[in-house]
Length: 131
Image 1 (cartoon, rainbow, N blue to C red):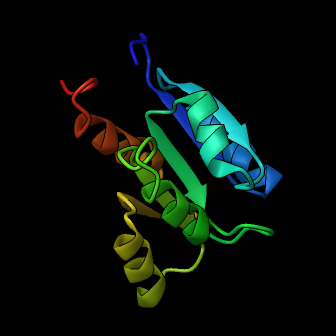
Image 2 (cartoon, rainbow, N blue to C red; image 1 turned 30 degrees about the horizontal axis):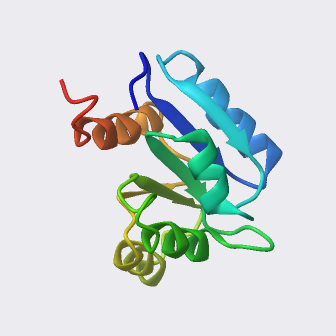
């Protein structure tokens, strides 16, 4: 992928949360795509080619942890950093996300600047956007 600005794929079933994430990141120099479901996650990711995925855990149909596992088991999507988001900061959920390959974890509601910082950290680990 060769583009001027990183693409962030936001996946959250709650419209208000999704819109808040988009508004929060709007000041940053990112291309943002926001969707409401993880159904067909591999196809969505292959179509959008994001540099970082920000995904809610608790969603109907396909939850974020299942979607994360699916992405990490696919050779074409496994290397894309995924930040899991949840209002629940339980240790078992954090460990499960890490075991499945999450790059980071965001607790909702997040602190000011935290969303941008976590995405920036994932991008810094990427060779294409490393400073």
